[in-house]
Amino acid sequence: MTEQFQDQGGAASMSPSPLKRWLVSKFINKFTSLEQRDKQRRKQEKHRQKEGRRHVVEYFHQIDDGYSHLAAQMLQPLLEQYDIELVCHLVSGPQGDNSPEPDLLLKLSRLDAFLIAPQYGLSFPDHPEVLNTERLQLATQILVNLNNTGRLQHIQSVSTALWNGDDNALNELSQKLGKANPEKCQEVIAAGNRHRDKLKHYSGGMFYYESEWYWGVDRLHYLENRLTELGANKTNQPLLAPRPAINNGPLTDNGSLTLEIFPSLRSPYSAVIFDTAVKLAKDTGVKLVVRPVLPMVMRGVPATKEKGFYVFSDCVREAAEQGIPYGNFYDPIGDPVRKAFSLYPWACEQGKGVEFFSTFLRCAFVEGINTNNDKGLRKVVEKTGLDWQQAKPLIGQPGWEDLLEANRLTMYNAGLWGVPSFRLLDSDGEQQLAIWGQDRLWLVAQKIQQLLASMNHQESISHAR
Image (cartoon, rainbow, N blue to C red; front, side, top):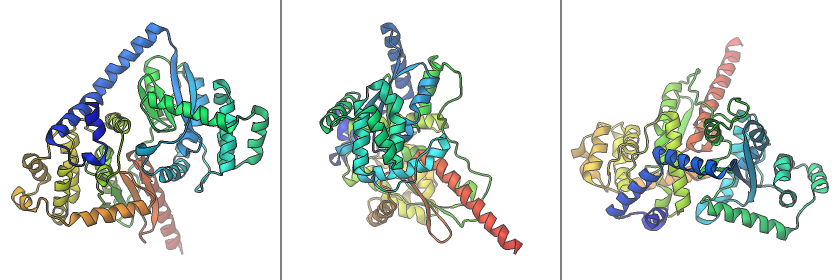
């Protein structure tokens, strides 16, 4: 069963057999469900209490990662608010198949961290350039030289000096705290990577507690809620990092702004957020343009078992928190996706492109419909409000590939590569925001309101004249 799931990530699984597709779907539904998560939580807590262990939270810090810099600023507040033992590991970024675009990921982490930091009351400098190599090495040597207590105490100041490019502060910290030699740095980071591998994850900026992973400040509220439910919130204060709300108002547009969404028909994150993004555009009067792309694994980009398991598990809790139906998954990878995309241009011609996309995602990720056969695909077509007899002869027709490839190139040119991604354009077609991730729609909504407020202000000045 594990091999089936792992194969699902590679290029060889672009067109799995019907049996394999069914087996993978069953595996994902069973082992990433909320019921399975809660069962595992009860088991872990029972073991923890039996062994008399404290609540031990492990944090994996990637020194050159923007998200890790934000997370580092939360470590002391976590210790102050929760009755936990915190262990800080140093790691490198995701390697191999877990990071198909490592340079783009680091670049995005710098931009994204800068954009979201104010929402969490944190700081991050405007830092589009790559970190200085010498500063990065010195910061690494300082942190490696510290024991866990010292690392937790000084990680924020070291990281801040690094990201601010403050050589004086880094040198002072080096003199005060000492520094390890390069060989020791490699040894400690390799040990952190091995431990992370053992716990079945691949990324930096991650928190781990009793069998579950939490990514940076974005998922910290899940960890906080779990600790609170276990009675570990010793101050009874509100969450340190509550999830930002998606605010669709109050200002509305007349279609001068354009929201582009780059989704995929096999993306669980797209399934979680697609309808919400459509509603955001509708509620704000922003023009919506859907620019679908081929799923990454169907473009020959592999993904590991660990990454797939984390993504599907994360989507379950993301959807549950937002009250979005999700979780009865029937994998559409391969032929179902191709067949659906062959119908997509026709659905757009009928004025039903958005509805078709939404319906396919709902059928594949919520209703458990097997879209690999005509029976399932017919349900998608008819639930969209389209005629199956008109659709049937069009299945498998070429012509859609160029459209999806053009969308992919546009997405990459914006510095993005994963789905769903968003671009916000002004009335002149100039890019005002380009961001990746279903958990960034709140930022898109915020930017829409900022742009509309600015436009209204300029209009008021014009009228006053």
